[in-house]
Length: 86
Image 1 (tube, rainbow, N blue to C red):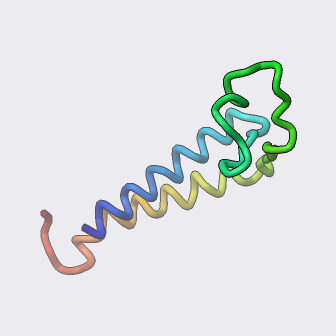
Image 2: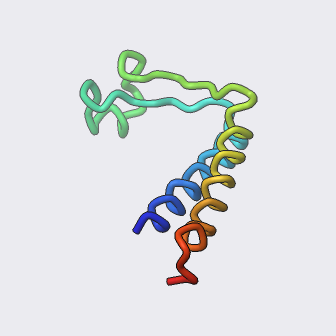
């Protein structure tokens, strides 16, 4: 169970690192203040309900490196506890 949890966390960190390499900024909508009409209607200005996040230059590399270390940890986890495999 721990192996699959660490593997999933590591894979998600690598995916997030690759995604942030490809974008310049991300717009995050506040769930409590917005409605479905604001997402579909291009005439509505959702300026009050959005927040723009710009990742720093080192953020993708940190996520890729930490994700790779977590994946390697998850792969070697059964060997650390003396079991041969699953």
